[in-house]
Amino acid sequence: MDPSPPSSTSAPERPTPAGGEVSPPATAMEQANGFAAATLSELRKVVWPSRQQLFNETVAVIVMVAVSAAAIAALDRFYTWGAKLLFR
View 1 (cartoon, one colour):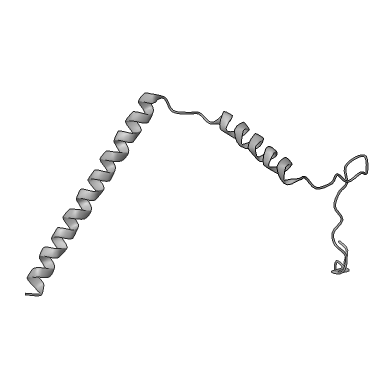
View 2: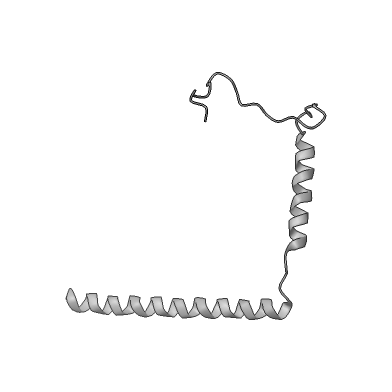
């Protein structure tokens, strides 16, 4: 282990490609094209649900939201009733 602390005046060296040449930074258009290509590549990996699976899961979400809303409404009515009794 090197006992001397790293020098704070020099920037860390960046590795260069095998040929020793440093490529110029990518333009905005090249970056956008690379992003679009990477995005499309990732979207091809997605396993999309079938129409039946999508329908079933949508129904399940709607039912759970309705049950949650009913439970919240019931608690709200209960606490309203209790507050009216308490603060008459």
